[in-house]
Image (cartoon, rainbow, N blue to C red; front, side, top):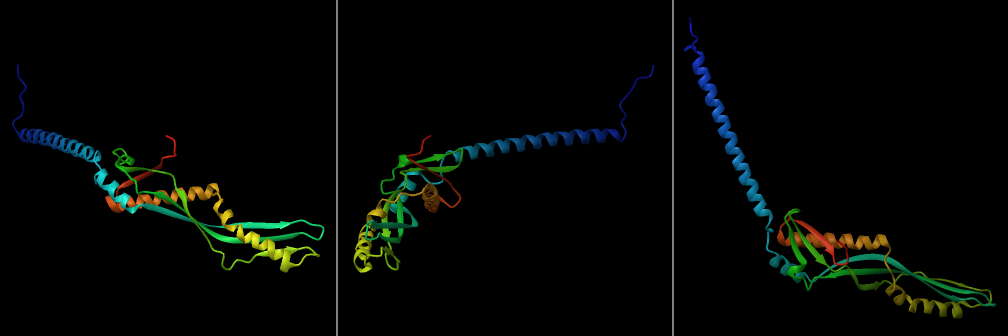
Length: 215
């Protein structure tokens, strides 16, 4: 009875080459996988450490002392009285610049953290507070209205002087509208981010949090 045998012809070298190719492919895939794992492990280690030590960044930020944001607005003051001789009304509207700032002179390492997940510095600072109020009274055009038995040179100027006198107090008591308060916070975050990046590197992430924020 005849027995089957593997042919010794040209097919044998082909099978040998195929086996060799398969072995090389498996070996290459394993090497690449090991290299990828090593790379990911190195990245994970690097992610756990900030580009510059927290103490160095905190010390450099502290020397800046202050980050400020300005808001230009106006204050309107009206003074007058009602009388049988005629009403008197004096109105003055004055441009005002409100400056808000964050005190960085007490920046400590505990206010700075590194987030490996976000690859970002996390800076916690007090919320912006008003640090200056500038009043630009030059060039203002006050409006004075007097009744038919009133003299502008007397009653009108009297209440106008009162309005001018009270501008500083009115400007000091100004409160920001919600949209302006958000502008101040957004600008403060941006400037603090720029400051930290100028110290730690232009490509680092920066997350700014205010101590008044919850969560």
